[in-house]
Length: 176
Image (tube, rainbow, N blue to C red; front, side, top):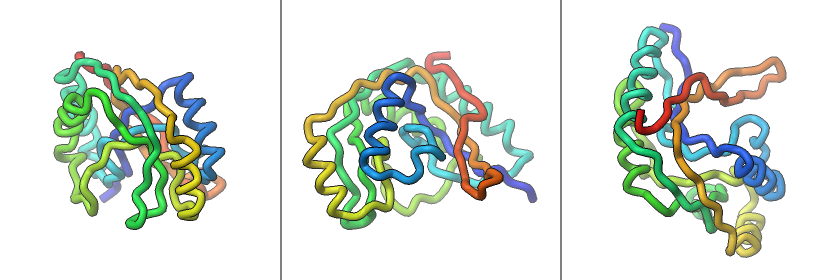
């Protein structure tokens, strides 16, 4: 059966997205041109093509049930020693974030998770531990405000250069 590789995320809007991309580039993230700055709600999941409209409905219903809210990004942290990922911690209205995630993390978008959910915005993945430690120290005072007004359904596609890229295929405004 044909499937689509989907995910659900809060995309970081400009101008903050450009700022975070600058941090990603400076920290050595090799995927900054393949996935926009985001906060994942549903990690990659394969959804049968005939259930795609169900995913869209779920996205709309989940967004309608949650009013816009504000998060604070930073300071940076890492998943070491479990994984070489540098990320921005997420604070602020975590209750609204958890409510939105719970409403969208349902079939057909639900999937088994290998790790507990930790809300974060990735700055760099698969980098050397020494670089992670240096970035955590150098960016210790970094903070940014993210106003969450919409949620996006992303799809991964393979491009002619062989790279996989994620792009929004649908979005829904919070609060209807």
